Structure formats: structure tokens, C-alpha cells
Image (cartoon, rainbow, N blue to C red; front, side, top):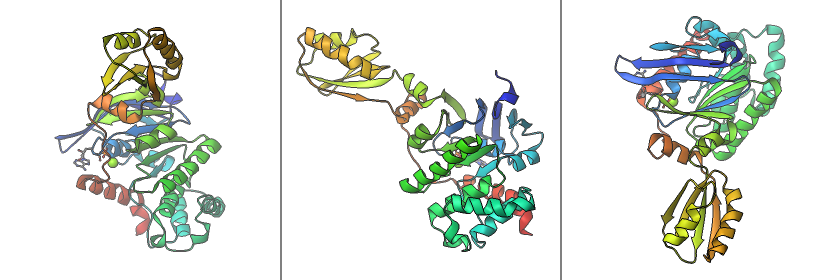
Length: 342
Ligand SMILES: Nc1ncnc2c1ncn2[C@@H]1O[C@H](COP(=O)(O)OP(=O)(O)O)[C@@H](O)[C@H]1O
Ligand SMILES: [Mg+2]
């Protein structure tokens, strides 16, 4: 294993059992490299929020170790809270404060020096395009504006590691794209590491350099999106021939690099690691064998197929949250902001 100090996040044998019975996270280990965008994917109830809560000092684990930005999370949860940035799925901005007040409050909470608070607040307000609404109550904000405000709150103290728990849930595609644009800019500027949970597979595919798939508390796969897709046997070349039969199938199976050939309706699905390289060879071989071709298409596997492969189940997007999820989150929010509300 690489040394813990070299990683932004190192997790070893992390487990959480609620009430002695609900095994939410089971013996999970992984590393996140500095500056990386690391996606933590899984369906509702998989254990994502539980993991984030443990890594951000909000929840004690049942077993395991975690080091975040060089700090032992479970030995020093308070240091972790000050050090990292955290954006929840549920709103953490105070509706009865203005955008500016929310940011000033967060700056004070995270110990941003007074002298630099105003400049940082102003620059974030502008950056997140909240400028015009800065002095309006947050409850008047649109969903997208609120998320941008929450992102600003999460990074006001310039954290080196930012945790995002389903940050774009409920946003429209435009809002999602906008949110990620800001995150990507921030990463580019200060090399911030991003740990994001999401159940939008396409989002993880575009944003994350590496992803881990968690299912029923178990880590079932980890790698770059393309590594994971390659493990499926790569691309699917769909071939529609003018006739079908064992000879046609034999020609396709005999091509270099072909992993499998399955007949589907009147076409063949040919799996190969590099579909685009297979196509010319395939056309040539078919011509030589006298097999006419009516159509060829190339499909790259998506993370949906990766998920299916590693869990044996179709990926379902479930927008709902469980009651326990909600209760846990409310607890975390109170913990994070409670002190300032007296
Ligand atoms: N405070 C809690 N008490 C008991 N069970 C919980 C609690 N929080 C979460 N769980 C359960 O742990 C499992 C993982 O939940 P969670 O980490 O919220 O998953 P995800 O964020 O991936 O949807 C689920 O079965 C959930 O019902
Ligand atoms: Mg969750």
C-alpha cells in the first residue's frame, strides 16, 4: 500500500454497524490521491452517506482506520471538521439568513481570519454567480442558486479535500453542469481533492478520475471509468449481416481480440476491448468469407453496464431518501452548525 501521507484520503477496513444490526459499511478500503476527483457510487442505501459521515468526523466507525489530509480522522474528528469542506445532499444553508450572511457565518465557524473574510466572501459570491442576490434571504433562492451557495459555504476556508454528498440531487441538467463547472475550476486553481458520492452514473463518468462502486456496504469495484469498462470486455460492436448462422458466428469469433459473440435478434453483439480497431478487420474478414454486411455500430459500455456486471443488478436511480438517512443528516447539520446558533 502507498504511504498514508502521500494520499489525500486513506481508508482501511472501515465498517459501520448501526444498532448492532444494520451493517451499513463493511470492511471498505481505498485511497484517494491528492488532487483527484474520486467518485463513490452506489444506489440508495448502499452506505455512501455513512462513509462520508465517518470520513468527515461526524460519525464514529465500528471498525477501521481513516486518514484524511494527513490527519487520523477517528483520533481527531474536530481537527478534521475544520480542515475539510463538506457539502451535503440536503440543504445546510440557513434560509433565514442572506447568502452573504451564510458565508460570513461559515467563515467565522471555520476560523477564517477576520481580515480576509470580506474579500473571500465577495469573491465567492461573484464566482458562484450569487452576487445580485447576495443580500436576499436564502429562502428566496432557486434550487441551483442554493446549491452554489452551499458549495461556496463548503469551500470558504479553502479546504484541501472537499466532500460532496449527492450535491446535485434534484438539480436540472443545466444546474448540474453549472455546479460541476465551478468545482472543476476550483480544482484547477488550488489542486483541491474532491470526494463525491452520486447516484448519477453519467456524472461520475465525466467528472471523476477514479470511481468506487459500493453496494450493500461492500466495495465491489474500483478504478478509472475506462478501466472498469474494459473489465467488461470493452466495447460492443453490433453487426447486422445479410445472413446469420454458425459460419457467420465462427468468422466473428475468430477475429483478434474478440471476447464474446452473442446473437441478438437479427444482429450479433461482438465484445472487444477496442471496438474501433476491430471494425476494419471485421469488415475485411466478412468480405473474405462472403458474408454481406447490412450495418455496423459501435457502442462503448456505460457505467450502467459496469454496475450490472459487478452487482448483478440493474442500476436504478431512486430519488427518495430513507427516514434514517434524513435523521442522520439532520444530526450532522446540527453538529456542524449548532454552536453558532445560540
Ligand atoms: N442512523 C441510522 N441508523 C440505522 N440505520 C441507518 C442509519 N443511517 C443509515 N442507516 C442504514 O444504513 C444503510 C446505508 O445508509 P446510507 O449510508 O444513508 O446509504 P446511501 O447514502 O448510500 O443511500 C441503509 O440501510 C440505511 O437505512
Ligand atoms: Mg446518502
